[in-house]
Length: 235
Image (cartoon, rainbow, N blue to C red; front, side, top):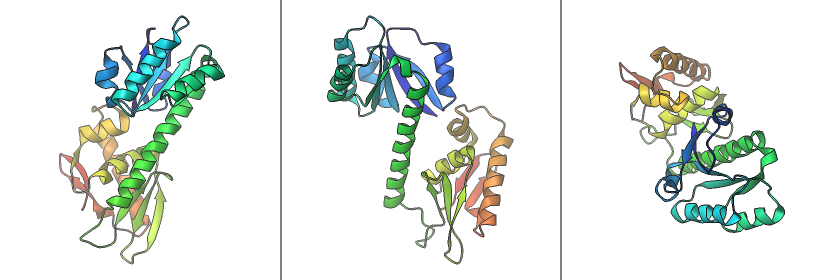
């Protein structure tokens, strides 16, 4: 789940919130005082102009955001003329959308940007800190571009297996810190955005991932169950 801060003079519409949530985008309303203090806590900031808003106000918000964080910043404008888009881009906005494109096109654009950024971070992390087992060849790693798991068999063969959305979220979390036990609350929050889910749902996902690893002739015991606590990927 990605978390987006929304800066607007209008109240947030519940239907809008639900539309974003369908794509794993959680909207959180921010006021002007939060721009300095909280923008770095979010994956991106969405500035939604109202009909009477001055361009100077939006410019001020964009500059404050950029002064305090490097987070994505997108603007929804009442009328996004070429001149307005250029002004906002020059001072740091990542994109400006006309209200007629809101929300469907904007949602897809934002989600794609965030997923691409996440994939690039994961690839950088894998290149600099590969998961190794006792100094030998890596046993597994995540491929964020294909949403898959790359496995290395005992014969050093490389195999790639596809993962479902929830399987990928789970393995991405476990592989982020090999050797660390992730409890059920952390796993639930990462997959479903809430810490309250029956434990059997996680167990079911683990079962299917292990089956895929076995079918690829790799060692499924690399995913270890920690009784009454959670799961971990072995170092």
